[in-house]
Length: 149
Image (cartoon, rainbow, N blue to C red; front, side):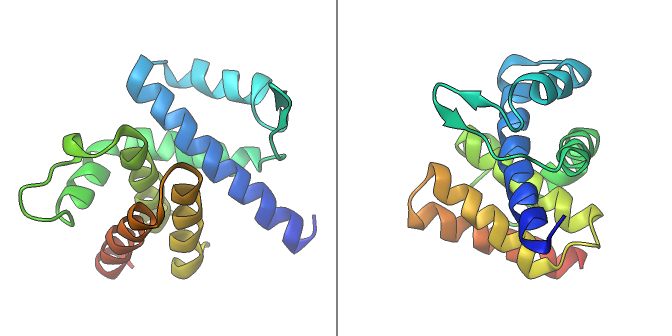
């Protein structure tokens, strides 16, 4: 796989991981069923005339499984970087998943450069939010990276 194709596959995996984490939080979908559903029906498929890019499945699995397994640690880390009076529970549910996935990657994926991990999740934020929220993702993940990298 070319470097560009791998980068696109990883970007698709990150976006799908955020969606899977959202579904896990909102519906309580068990992890095994969640992964199976994404493998069978979402990754690289066409849904309502939208073609989902082929995602790097192993990377997707690692981010989802890792973020769920380490959620308590991840949430504490994120909470420590939020402004006074803010809690993870106050954040938009999608925003929380973007921060969880990004924090997991910063904690556990030393193979991914810090700047790449942060900018990828800022890009994911742009898929759902305006510039202000994307900057928020950048700020929180940058603070997390300074502590864990």
